[in-house]
Image (cartoon, rainbow, N blue to C red; front, side, top):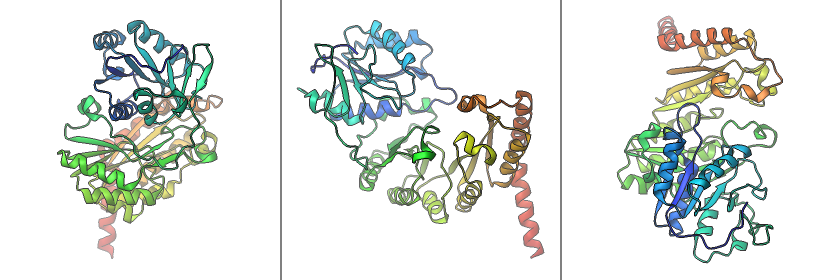
Length: 414
């Protein structure tokens, strides 16, 4: 880090995401949350530059220079340390007069040095709000790190993390075009909880997920505000919506009271404890389709630290279907160490679940093959063959057709 002074320079506040994720581009939730917090702190001119939507770094650089920022906030949560350092060098060359505030890579201690950063934010978006307020006392800002004039690494006061996500600033959704992320113009989005990143294998099943839920009254008030502005679709941004089914039920019932025509869950359901009551509440709240993501076959779950009760998944899928919610099942084949028996187990799972849509992709496309590099990778030709067969099943809808035929035959015999 470089020496930082408490006074941030004047000029626009520009929030930047440089990474280009594989597959569909998710909304820059971290940047939108930070932008909302910055506005609450009084920032008058705020912009978001999402490199995931731009053609190349040259276009990103041109837009950053045109903005003439006083402060640049860089989202480094999905970067490794070396990639983030390269980002900062490139961005500093484009805006040499700006101060750079960085969200470090997930799991990295903000007290570790990040070359090129003026400030490192290790806390919630409210940390940015505190930092941007006039005459901010850095010593009293929790979750911030910087270097003083003597080159010493300094940190703000320690603050225990609240078990609830109190007062999360509304996402600054107006700063991006929702259509770029597959969402309609009438969409609004809100955060109901914050959790470890989706799919992170490091500690979920050893120590439990770290999930902080927003107070229900705050969620319902923000939903009412979005509905009053004319939003017809509500996108819930929550990496672990049904991690606590009791909380999920309370949120679904609150959103049903608000009355959105359509509810979208941005992340797949864990779907291991979705009962009839929760499924009906989600349907009443406007959920039309639920995404379920099936983990690796049972033999490999312990090795890959991705545990999932497939019987519970099947029961949840049936509860959702009976509530009138379409089920989209997402399968991955070709996990490290997977053999033909494992792939047949996955195929049987797909055959048994009441899906409406089925999507299948190989593990190397899903970016999970590196999670267990010490295990042998299955032959690509066999994985692609099995994936093609399941995709054909999805195209022909044979599974649901046979289930309807069997149900009709059972009713006739009764």
